[in-house]
Length: 306
Image: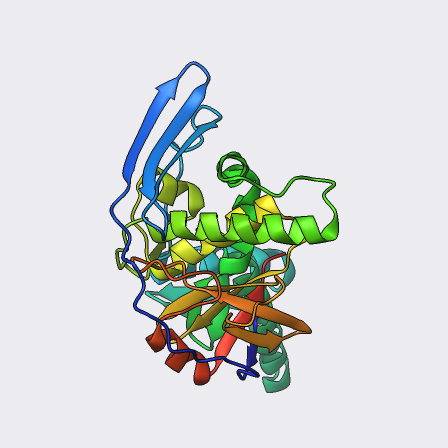
């Protein structure tokens, strides 16, 4: 589970207003070699950029948006509970109404009934945790869940590796100083690429993972954060990467050597250089929006990408 932590260090700098990203030209074509994604975009300096990436056939075309509906989850949980009770605890009866699961028990004594209910509740909690984990969700409160951003980023890193290679991943075997330079250059370029994807608030019951964003280029802040984190993980497997969530927003922390102007926080033994993938403002690596700084100062949940 992500650790709730206070901000240990946040450098609030007076920055000039960032450039706003132009809408990229986005073309996806099926070819005998695979699906070709051709994106024309502009970086922070306004220079024209182009990435042409070939993915295995069907990679983007079959990408699915994750959807979460609590009644559906509860129905599935009720079915699993019923099957388990039939095998392991015949005295337990399970019923589902909407988003509520009710457990009832039969027994010869009140103590036996209490025991059956206690065992049933423990199994219900275990099955619920397993079910939301399968659906790439995290429990954030007694009746609250959200998508597991860090795990989604890690699982999608291999799939976005072709795009990471196109954007210019750090070469294997480089000396440490050279690798750090290459990783920062990659992080800057990938950040501008993701910031250029049009921002669109989405239904909280759905989540577009990286391949779905690349297929249909519009995304919310957490979806863009996950895409950016997946690209970083694909490009630099040893680089510390974390997704930081706060009230109604998400940013990415990168464990790169910080420069004197980078905005950072320190947590879990790492100084995290902050990044703002949401766009459309083309904030530089190490710079975040003033509203983000204010939200970070209230506390943040940090989840490292495996």
